[in-house]
Image (cartoon, rainbow, N blue to C red; front, side):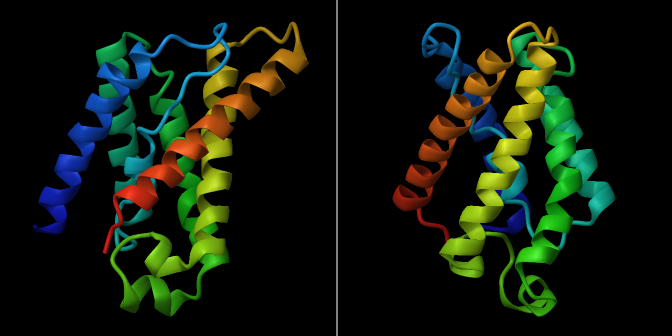
Length: 169
């Protein structure tokens, strides 16, 4: 399967899973909502330039926003992680790894430790910004911190389960 076709399938598959499966799970006391849709952005090829990466992230997040009726709530965190992603990859990997060895970030291309740091940090940034936008009132910091932590933890669990069960070459 070509890279373009594979990413188009991922685009629609992650949105479908988020909208019609994960968003239908009743949240635990409005506290934990699992999010994995942004994994599409994290799995985009190394060769995608920053401008196109941010443009794809905006279109992707805005598409999700249109389906769930939340204008900009998902688009903004998607663009944020698309902006941070190249910086983080340049810190975690030598330049020749991203250019020569592999097409996209993954356990096989990065190794367990750098990939885990990559996923952990971008998931945390995404969820922190998403919860901040959703919950713009700073009434209770512990509730905010707890929601970010719990949502990040459940999302990381799902992401690593996806990585284990659907191993990418």
